[in-house]
Image (cartoon, rainbow, N blue to C red; front, side):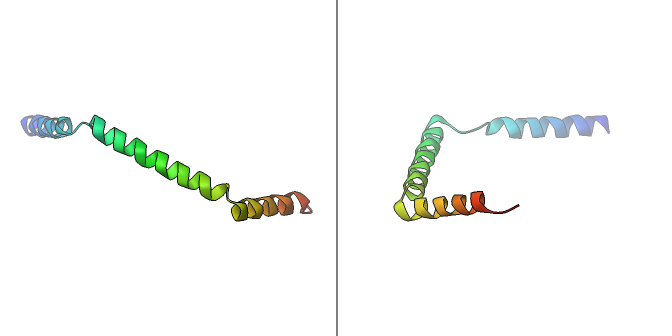
Length: 66
């Protein structure tokens, strides 16, 4: 029983070590994608129509009776 558990543990450990994480190029692509998404989100949030809607929501919330 103990030998089987040790063998299973060794197999799992080896499988986990094979693919430990992203390589540098994957990190770079992830960062580029995140920056692109952040730029798109910034453009949307700072557009005139969205900015007016957000201000309207805040004004209604501040003017609400409790």
